[in-house]
Image 1 (cartoon, rainbow, N blue to C red):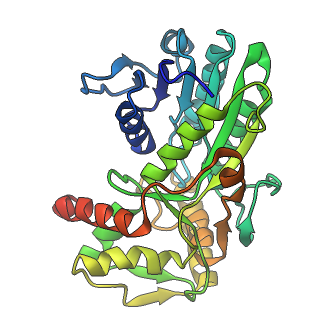
Image 2 (cartoon, rainbow, N blue to C red):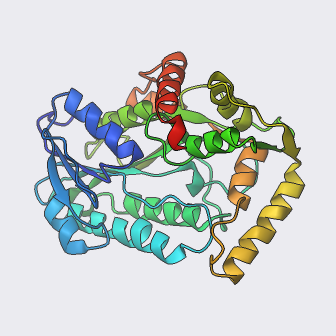
Length: 338
């Protein structure tokens, strides 16, 4: 176990997962530093403003941190941002690894993704023995795989201790990815379901993701079974993606989807739209559908967090009911902005 007075650095501490992780660390009375491109105005936090792509700035932020949570990433499943994705998610993460190994015995917890192992084929009750795919449906998935591999491969370098957390589909207050898009489409009456409704997908509440990051950091020691390992994290039974998101839509009094696009038709359309976006270099905006989004919602894509339970003592801290109510309250507060 680590010392709870050790300085914790949260890289990407103003991001979705990062903000909840910072709040949970502060709630536990731990000293926290945030490194992010945008400033954090919480007086309880030491702020280092900078860019993960700048090695010198990352070095300064990591200099005296005993624990580093690497949550920074560009999350985008659309084509056209390959250079930015690579610079931030791969090169930026290399800067973090280098900075962590400059100080002996640093603990590094990397926020990975299920996209690191998902390539469009069905995954049912997937665990950490799944191999990395040779090709991904999105460049984002490829960058998360490379960054995860390089983080875990650095284990032992100048005493570096590492592990990677692979959350399922994260939701909750502050979600900038899934729920705002769904609610916006529902408000316009244009929400569409993909597939036949039988595919299952995992979600996980954001505070439970933050909790498992801290569990991992506290259990990182040179001889710990956690060291150099990756962990899937979920917190409720898998269910159809659209059943899950429409539970919020209906609770907000918005119209549910009235149209359905079959899986193969949706995948073909996404392929065409991605091709057009590449051909036009994104001049007409992002494609409405991507192959990654279609596949992850139309074929089984669900995992078990049994290894996290066994090695980390993980159990969800926020129940499914409380997570729903908290997320719904946040969505209702901001519904006019979606």
